[in-house]
Length: 147
Picture (tube, rainbow, N blue to C red):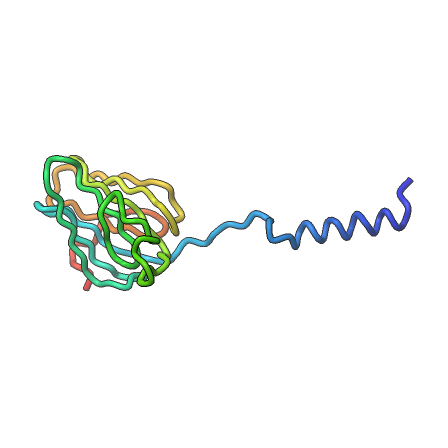
């Protein structure tokens, strides 16, 4: 038989568990939208929403697959320079992902701030390959450029 004191203790413990900061929470993805296009020399990105930049290009050399880390702050090579090495100018990224230009299109892997883990986009024989990427996924980019 549970006494009144034991009952109160159980209720208090349940409330404390619910209010505990170690409770599992789901991180909301950062809102963003941008168009990634393949170019003969690498990648071009045009931001529509959620970025500190409007237009970026990333040049690749050699025969290796072209990969770059894209974030709300800009673009950097892969493997990227760790943020702690950037010093006082380092700004926390709201989102970031690694995009790789492959023969058939684009492969994209989230590193933070996205509702998805990885995406693949096939362009078939379309050139240039253009895809609109957002926090929720990828789709065919509109035929008109985003400015």
